[in-house]
Each structure stands twice: as structure tokens, then as C-alpha cells.
Length: 249
Length: 283
Image (cartoon, chains in turn green, orange):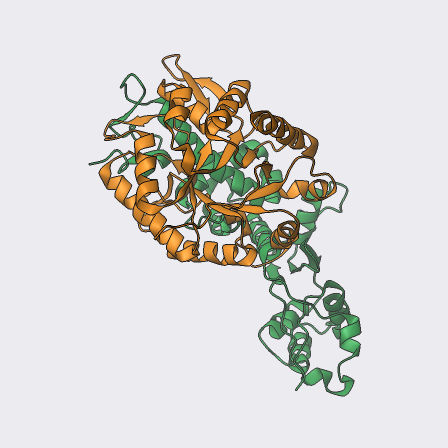
């Protein structure tokens, strides 16, 4: 029996006694000395969450966020040493966490922040620009596939998450109005930015990302929303470089 | 056969722990900083700014890859996915050094993101040596193992930390990373003499030195309790212990670690200058 055996469990559960056999220089059972490890673990994991979810933190306040992070790290400790991927269960956690259950938009804000972080670390790929598009055979463009680059993300919400996210960072931004918003996350160079999608664009980009032909994606988007504007969607895609350069046979 | 593979090709000069916020300032004015150390786990994404910055830095500076998540001191088998990610990172930039900690962080409950202590017994020695063999075999290079900062002791210890480290070096052929701040923190917390520790340490096996800041607290009995925070300037007694270490064991590549409350570049650059002065004096 080693004092290492109960160490990890006691770290995450402050109600548990310090494991036997952990001592100070006088041979007395470690008290505050064990608490240093307890504090380090929860504080470092909470710090990782705060870095990953700055908007959630600003919406609920730092003090509340830190307390909530303490609950989260005990409920969903990381399984991977890469802190950049820690916090994936945050949307599910927020949806079920009593004190913020009335803030029904919070889980989708967490999805947005997870998407931004994933995008930041995603693989590099040359995105399609207007110049490259102009160099492709124009008469067969609609029969090409334009998959999305690894750093692009699509997030659909029944809440005005783009407006909430923007206003959390800039108090001068317009107040959110009720209603759903769809978001495209794009990373043309190194900094991911969310973009508000117009009608039908979510269906359009989703279809492209699932390897539809351009013509099929336009048809699906038009079916979803009669106001879908393929020109506007393509302009957004080219300026944000979210589409891969298609393979021309 | 005599193994002549070097432990590290880092220069006998100061380096700093790289922080993304210092990227531009380092490029413009590195001062005495001759090499950089990165935390391996921060560069295990698929792309984007971290890897682009790393590629740019690696072209200009020798880089030391310092892992914080392998859990070498644990009783569990190493995470082979993580080890494979380390191999890919080392293959990508061919670092001047790879180091990890005599500590554990992964357990059945998950990854705890801290460097946790282990008892020094024959059993844990076998685990640690087996893990280091596995790391060195997978990476195809020697590694340095860092001495920990500790806040408590295990009553079950069968040997001293130094005898444990000596045995690890003997069994695996690995080198050591001597964190002088950790020596000072642990000696204070364990009520032992930091100079005795340095004098007994297998300095011939040391490939790199770490310096960093600590916080000062007390335990519930009023005994001093130093916390290895990496969030402050190097303390004066640690500079003195560092000078003694160089005088005893010779010059070593020396890293300034500052990981929390990261200061503006000129402050960190100045810490590197202080290290350069001590290195110069010890020549």
C-alpha cells in the first residue's frame, strides 16, 4: 500500500482526508502541504478553462466563473494532457448546471468559444481566393466540390449568439434581439473570427462541407431559404478563405 | 559500447521559457537569450499560430522541448498516443534537448495538470526507469529528467531523492535537468540543506539548469512553505545557490522559467542578463 494510491482521489475531493503516510519534516501528517497540490490542480485547470472561455467568463463574472470551474474540473477532469482541448463538455455542463440553467444561450456561446479554439489550432490549408477562383474553368464551376478548410467551423443556434458574443466584448455593440443566429468561424491567417450567416448560408456551407457539388449546395440552400443569395455566400467564402481549392479533373 | 550521444546541444548560455506574447520582442531584441524552451503540450495542435511561431523560432534559436504531461513518475503505463505526439514534435524541429519531470500527472481520474510527487522506492524506481527507456527508445534521443519541487514527503521512502536520481541515470543512461529553484524550494520545505543537496548531486549528468521564482508561505505549524509558482523573479538565495552550482559542477545551459503572471519582455530579458553575468563569473 502506497500513499500514492489515494493521492489523486483526495486531490479532487476536499472532503477526503489526506492519505496516510504523507508527512512534513517532523513526521506529522501533511495538512496545508497537501492542500498546495489540491490548490495547484484545481487552479491550473480552472485557469485553462478561463483562457478557453473568456466570453462565458465575462457573461457570468469572474468570481462565479471560478467557482463554477471548480465544479467543472471535478465533474469532467481532462483525459488529455493538451490543455488546448480541455473543456469540450462545457456546453453539456452549462445546460445542466443549476445556477445558470435560466441562461439558455450559454451552452451555445460555449460551443462558439470551443469552435474558435479548435479553429485556432486546426491544420493549415490554402483557402480559395477570388483570384484562384477566376483561374478555374468558369463553365464547369457548378460541377466542382469545394470542401471547407480544417480551420472553418459552422455553428447554428436558436439564440442570437453572434450578437451576445459581440456585445460581451464590446458594450457599444447593438443589444441582441431574440431569434436564432448561424455563425461561420474562419481563420484566414492565424486569428479565428466569427461571421454572421445570412439566410440559407448554413445549409449551403454544410452541404459543401459534406462534399456536395456547388450546384447541389445552391439548390439545397435555396430550398431551405428562398432569400438565399449565392453571390453573397460566395463573396463571404472567398473573403474568409474557408473553402479548399477544388480538384479539377 | 561507449555511448557518446550528447545529452543536449544547447549552448552554455541563458535561455528563457518561450511565451507567445513575447514572439515579436524576442525576434527584435533577444539580449543575452541564446536559446528557447517550449512546453511540448502547447505545440501539439494541428497548425495555426503556435506551430508557425515555433517553426520561425527554431530557424533562429536552438530549442529545448520540455514536456509537462507525460507522467513519467506514475505507476500507470505511459500514454502512447501522447508519446507519439512528442515524437512527431521532436521530429518536426529536431530540438537541442528534450526533458521531462520526475513527477506524475495522469491517473484513473484523468490528467491533473500538475507535477505530483512520488515516493522513492525500488518499485517506483523500476516504473520510472522503464518509462524513461520507453521515451528514449521512441524518441530516438536521450532525455533529461528534472528534479521536482516538493511540499511534503512520503513516509514509505526507501532512499533519498539523489540516490533515486543516480539510480535512474545508471539504469537508463538519461541525463538530468537540475532545477536550482526546485532544490531551494524542496530543501526549505523538507528542512534540509540546499547546498548539501547540490554537493551530493550527480552534476556530471546535468545537461541543463532551470531557474525560476517561488512564493513564500507558511504551513499550519508556522514552518516555511515555499511554492514553486514560476510567477516571480528568481530569488537572491537561488541566485547564490546557482553560482555555487556552476562553481562546483561547471557551466550549464541555464533557463529562466516564468509561466504565470508573465512579465513584459524587458523584465524577462533582464533575468537572462543576470544569468549571463553569473555564467561569465563562473568561467
